[in-house]
Image (cartoon, rainbow, N blue to C red; front, top):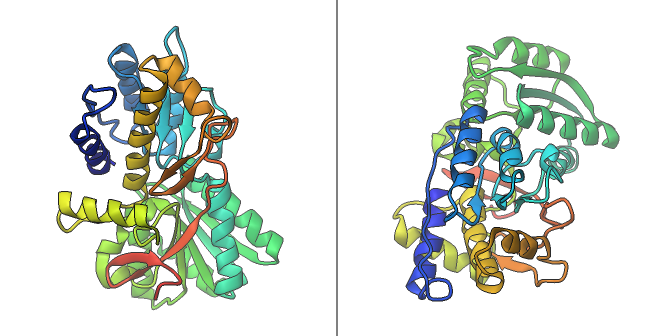
Length: 331
């Protein structure tokens, strides 16, 4: 997120900024902690020089901070690149996001499991937080609607030291696909223990696992849902990926970075057209795709609905091949 947002700011300022003024990126860290996110939001809210917020990364921190950004006498628009909880939709008029919600991720993973993998009996291991529970719920609902059976859905916490009992029960029950509604450490633990147990199920995960492709052979063949993959085939994205590689050698953007890049440029357009007043920026954003033109970004077309969600945003399935996350069809 930070690298891509800084790239966007540098590009804007190289083109004389916004209305002849330079854009400054103020960076703060919420540490993935909800209490810290509230303090960060209060700090940004209190600074009159801050006219828009890019973030937060995760659903829990976004939900916690939303009441700060949308309250008081001078609320400020916040746009998340990656917070996917359905509970964020319509939480207040100043909260937006450019990614699909779990209402898209879970069902798309379920359809992929049923239609492409031919799976009929699923096991789920989920992180016991808003993200994990949301992905578990939406996957299970769609998988059951299609005719599949979720044999069991087992929770874990970051401190959980072994998932072997869950995996062994799923093997005895006859699972033929595993969903890891997890963050990266939990998924890595599950995959290591699958290898020890000799389990060869196809494994699916959500966008919180982005970056796990760097784990080598452990994750080869893992499928992930994402709002964006860097091999997206259009000129705008190709230029972004090339610019990103020049700015950060050896790096490729992920959905969080691509979303942050789009958000900075969208906020810049809002400031250019509506001015730097917080309310004017929010009102402009609320009309993007509904009175104002949609924004054509590297992640695709951005248009906001009445809940601040990115209308029409879809999920793609990527597969880990040789240390890279690529579109499933691009083998």
